[in-house]
Length: 150
Image (cartoon, rainbow, N blue to C red; front, side, top):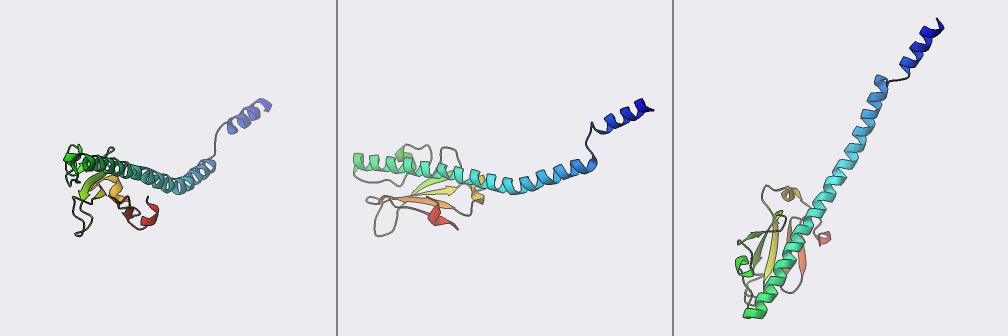
């Protein structure tokens, strides 16, 4: 009798009960519900650096173009990019040149614009939708938190 009850107790202490497993699943689910959106938000913020890097590279190329030719260009291919408009390095954004306003022609002024690739993962970013940099050095953005984008 002593031996059979000893075996019975040791068998019970080796496993998990169903309620323990359910509690662990609930706790993990709650943690994931909190952590996953924060993680995805961090990834979105990190991908914005692709737009900024692309714009800064294009702005540097515009300034070199101005030094060499005495004018800015509205064509990304003249700046050495493969296409007009062109994709950013990590291909999350489309980069293009715009004239900043009718009172300042492209010969004297430019505005570079980074737009999320249509249907791409960054197109879901509503906080910082488009990024801009002007020949004056002004950096702006559009979106629900545009002031925080740069």
